[in-house]
Image 1 (cartoon, rainbow, N blue to C red):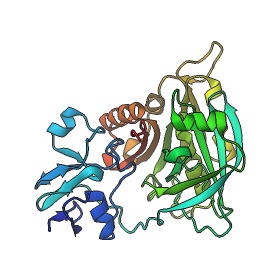
Image 2 (image 1 turned 60 degrees about the vertical axis):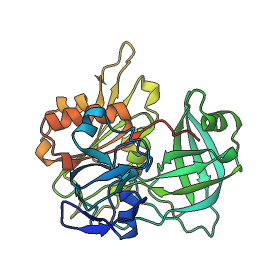
Image 3 (image 1 turned 90 degrees about the horizontal axis):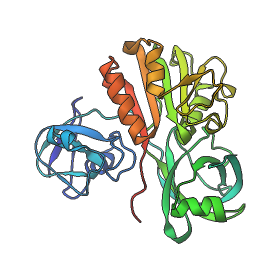
Length: 331
């Protein structure tokens, strides 16, 4: 059985046919991951020794990245002993993912193409998540779609989702044309490793576009109860949209003391705020990147552009975390 070694000295055995991510989880080791379908690149890492094989297409990698030896560990299996240039998440214990029933409590129109859906869990449901994680909602006909949780506290058995309309989307048609209060659904979760790590002595920056603000909202809510010993030195939220309507709530209402910078790419005449892209708005503030940690959530194009620009400007790669919203895999 192949043995997989990580940069920090940890190792685990990998059964042929199992992805590296799943093999690690079976051994009690958590590698960064999100979609588990080879699309979002959260699990991207480099093989420095050994051979792996792709279990399915790695659409989250460019041809240049593949040529340089990068793989996506969620869809790669070890063929020989392997050394990966990646570290695990240490002592983080992920809440158990499970499939549970739920009912729609409310559907609120936030903008012309965004709704807030509140799902109600059964009183007996045992569900816990780390702010920033997501769930897969299983809708009519078994269609599955991923949505970030927008609330940190789920003890009241309510889950908040922010959902944008997608032209021709099967689940989108359900949310915007058919869904009603008390509909019975199922979901699987929580999922993913997009959540806050150690923030002490760092300036925390969130970059979000569109409904990518949902997990940011959850993480901001969690900061209100953060032990001061581990709290960041500062918190800044850059939230981008096309027009002012796209920014459907004020993040400053969640927690006092942090800075909110709205950024518009198609601002109307009279807009006096920042325009362009969220990562450029951050760079324009001349941040101390050596002491800044960035959490980015939104389109895959934004994530890739932001990461390239920030790393080129001096942000350590280990201080950039992201959750890319990628097109749904075919059902």
